[in-house]
Amino acid sequence: MEAIILAGGLGTRLRSRVANTPKPMALVAGRPFLEWLLQGLAGQGFSRVILAVSYLREQVMSHFGSHWGGINISYAVEPEPLGTGGAIRHALAAVVTTGPVFVFNGDTIAPFDSAEMLAAHRPGGVTMALVGAPDCTRYGAVEVEGGRIAGFCTGSAGPGLINAGIYLLGRDTFDGMTLPQRFSFENDFIRLSLDRVRPCIVAGWFLDIGVPSDYDRAQTELPRKLGQSPRRCPAPPQAIMP
Image 1 (cartoon, one colour):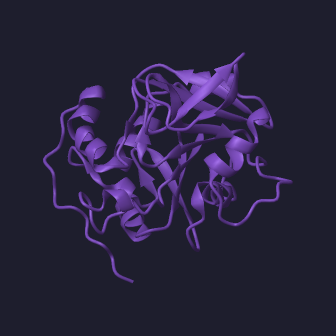
Image 2 (cartoon, one colour):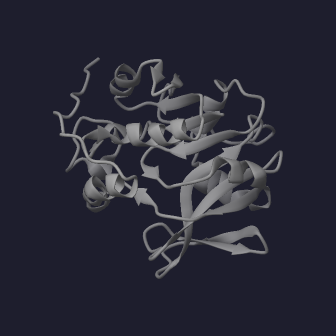
């Protein structure tokens, strides 16, 4: 199986905790967050991952190289920030599989079953993993009716389903669409293409390191959920100046 991980985020809201470091390389329990993601993919049999990189990409590329944890690593380097949608479209050009490809946000993690998502997927469409949350205020609730995504409720308080940041799509997903070079996958594609999007509800937990409070919480919660002991934290990676 093959996957794209969006690893080019600026991490502006996380600067008070992690400076001069791309967000997916922020240390969580002594390891770059991206290591936790890749470890989970290796455990499910993924053999190749394309890292969509931009901001301080040299740190990501020098750390992981061309192989990590039994996974072949390739890079889709954005010539300029392309947004989540533009980054996915750019990275799809590097995909080698003829089947559907998984896409993951580089700052969130949730347990998922690749076989379950593949079974739910339909050619020409997009499968989006959803996970239950005790409070949807920050992320917005995803409304599901009759096995389909009916809409999104921004700022919805209370429990509900949220986007887990895991997708399954084809190499031809954006073919024939008029989209700018830079666009948001969530807002400019998903919200406008609900007839092509199928939900796959995953059981379990969800962690996001995008804001300081959640990043701090992940330091103990992530290794606990994965049943691992944290490493001794090394010095944060330094920015590589051009």
